[in-house]
Image (cartoon, rainbow, N blue to C red; front, side, top):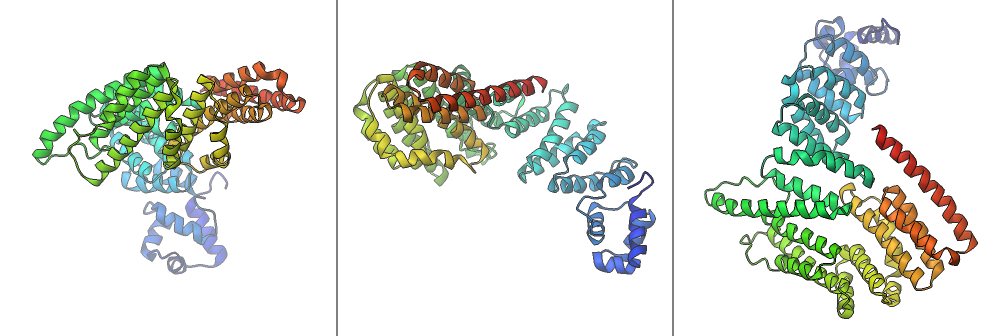
Length: 466
């Protein structure tokens, strides 16, 4: 389209070439003839829904005229939210994010549009249009950066959840950027924010952070739980916006802190925490959701009793643990990781267990595909750790072919999620057992290592540039 091209001129040219009258266009588009006349003559600004119908009639792709539409009907006029909102949502449907960015930048010359843009972002997020919502949240956050408002903190919380991905280095940066904003959130919403932040740091194995955040979540959860009991009697329910029943934040705090104790080798304290979320007699609610969460935590308490016992060197509970996770398929990945890890620490042979679940182990990688990103992040990290522990186990057992197979797969998977800790562990394992590697294994390792090195170098450059 030339510099003097307008939507009106293009429509008129089309009508002339197709020998169409306004009545013809109205009939084919379902638009009122009077409205069409006003739109085409320039007496009325066209709605985006009207533009879409005319564009379809002309046989052009969706959004063909949007750039001109912005120039003619939006940027050249006074802001009109009733017109802009449908345009933003339509651009989100078509993934035309540049136009959303353009409109957002233009509107946010004035802080008066922050509330409506924030509400639009909330709706887009609910519809699953995360990239479009992120543009609005970012715009509002930049505009209100000096306001110290709750809306600013909520924008940062939403951006935190949107930006998380599989790359662990990136996730660490995202978590660190969000952490200072938690205290500015609504007191109740802080519980969900603390839960989400603790989960990210847990996947990153930042145990000091996990312990600090989990302790704070537990303290505030207890405070709110008893406040909730008084307010509930008055018919108030300030906690309905939480993603979990209120008591969950208390017992999840204990579960997280127990995990920290396990990692620090304090198995006695880990068992103490497990006993806390095993005994939930203090929870007074009896609804179905509450009972569901109580069963989950009591199951996890049982599993973590087995884990702490194994890690302390007592393998008398090994096959009880195997029986447990065999009937709890959702726990298979983590349970197997715990067993192999414990076996490596105590140099215990578990060949029979690995043979028993050989098919399930092979299918674990495939199960990660298609998983929602929030859980996939944790599963990918755990799967990489499992591959690392399996590699170590088989290499130490002298089963070098199998051990190196797992090592190469681990190196590849860890590179994808940018988990430097596991990458370094893989390199150390290979060097320790290099003399037992077949020539083709050594060649495959060198090729893969160079690829990992390039990926890490490019990733660090991208992060530093960002």
